[in-house]
Picture (cartoon, rainbow, N blue to C red):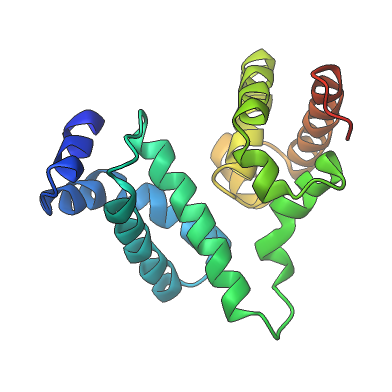
Length: 185
């Protein structure tokens, strides 16, 4: 089933929208949740919350790209879950490493809020389209899917130093690009 058909089911308040969303994008959202939560049961709980959030937000939202919309919900809900679960504990370092790396780029910006800004998101998308395919793939796997460096190495057959250097260089290029776009980072 195509995205627009699933979104139409949401708009009609047809519960098959949830079934189809799970069938088509369940593995994708669970991958994101697992990479943030490191726990299968917590990830499943968050995915159920993703489906509920989609049910409650569509309508009035009418996402053009359901995969991106659900992935964004999966990240937001998973990070909220980590924050709630660890309010009095130290958050596991591996759970925040991608965000911490991006904080180096965005400095004093609140990264989660800044990434949601439409203009900034557009600039980042344009920047990524200008990158070489392997740089873009590494960057997206790390900061969109929250894959670990080792997972990226395994996926593409790269060494750890190639991946970490590529991430650092791409972040540095992103800083320069955003500064040219008017962001004082």
